[in-house]
Length: 312
Image (cartoon, rainbow, N blue to C red; front, side, top):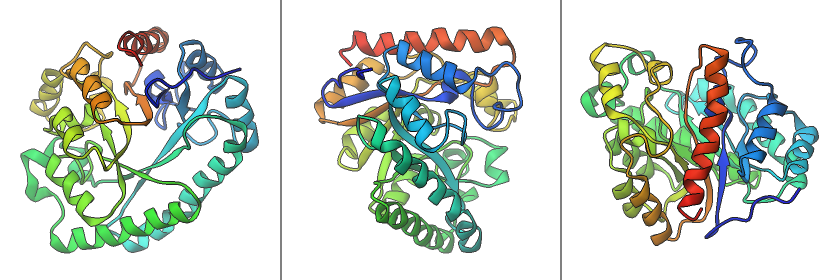
């Protein structure tokens, strides 16, 4: 099967989490669609690729590559969190990074499209996870100077390990971690030459303005997760003292065009700055019923149609 042609050098991908399939549901919730069903849905909706999701969910090794290739899908990347500021704990996780890169190696010969990105993120801490939005509301809850120094050393170690294997990584900022707010993201960019995965939804609820960030850091942004965000819902999560998991269960991230992201202007700016590479549609949800899992399939078709109507 031939993959959809990239428009403007931008390849549109989807992610298992958009269908409610991630580490806290796969193998746990009986309503989660199996990996093959998700691959079929992603291809049928017109996406050019997909993120890896939980290890083994979409397949393993060469089998994964063939499943993707048979459906004309590329592999956009895979997400992995690290305790960058804790040298001992960080080194204990390096085998997981190597395993992820092994998966890339096995799949790449069978697929087309941009190369997959190792999508690396901070793993945060409990006091951050139970208080989403702390990056901008309580900056003192973040790293001190010594912590940032250690963070930089750890980050550079992971970046170099990816590059030694032939893959250019991207850093993903994430709610509930030590890298949430615009200031924390820019601190990371000052510590390494790693590219940035701009996640529009997490950036909005982290207190940022995605279009301004895209313009300012276009030369460093090498991967994009496009998602909408309902800021009023997020403020209720914060006001109710709920943890980060509530942004999924309370569906802070709606379909594209239904939240506070100015998607039209963001896409225009994306083309204006000449971004090329993967644009991954993410709509993080935590379904509780079989009906909500089915609705996720409908939503991802809607998201793809939204981008197609904007020339992507």
